Image (cartoon, rainbow, N blue to C red; front, top):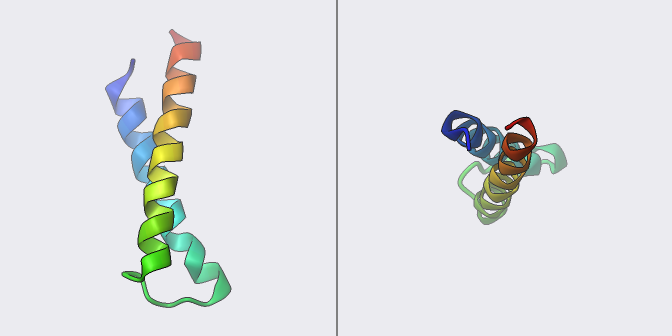
Length: 57
């Protein structure tokens, strides 16, 4: 598996997940929902990157 692709997936997923509460007006970047969705986004980003990495190789 490509470690760079997995790291990129984690970074993008956690960033997007952490920014999602901003869409409904929650301005607290260190709030509970931001941290929780950042974790979920990071896990989904890793999962997607692993799937893409396996398809490429």
